[in-house]
Image 1 (cartoon, helix red, strand yellow):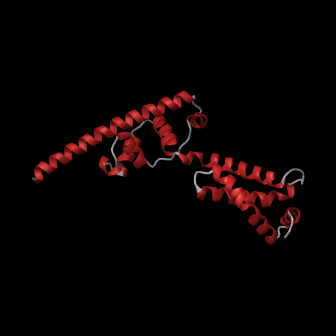
Image 2 (cartoon, rainbow, N blue to C red; image 1 turned 90 degrees about the vertical axis):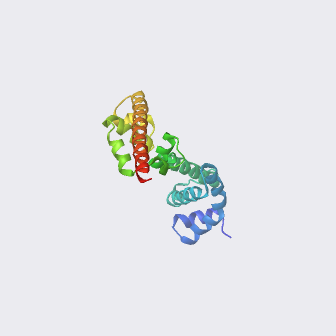
Length: 192
């Protein structure tokens, strides 16, 4: 069995056998760290893979002073933080169908009776400022601070435009729903 130092030297030379030994020896330990930072096992596995890639590419930078496991742990933690930030805007991503159902209080998208074209039409009726902020926040998952920086506006302007956009959308969708219900009720009377 090789020592950590021998494995490290082999990894510096990019020897597959040494890399496999390092992975076999420390993957469970690092996976436990990744699990603490991840939302689920699949995400932890992704973070672990990225961590090992970073370890393999930067192992030549390990100075030998201090704990090798501590050095790898720091890489895993930093990788988990980077992964979180990179995927943060997707964490709270809501499909437009789910968003409309949440906003209108119905239990499913089908109950709203809106087609994708109708939803797009209603969104496109928003003023450009409202539409931009709404899309960046509700659809893309940006925070108001990020939106303010991207659009060169005040953070409070972003918040108020989002709030107003929601109110306008709610009103337009409510009117559209009532029109469709009235139309459907009228057709049912004719059919009967």
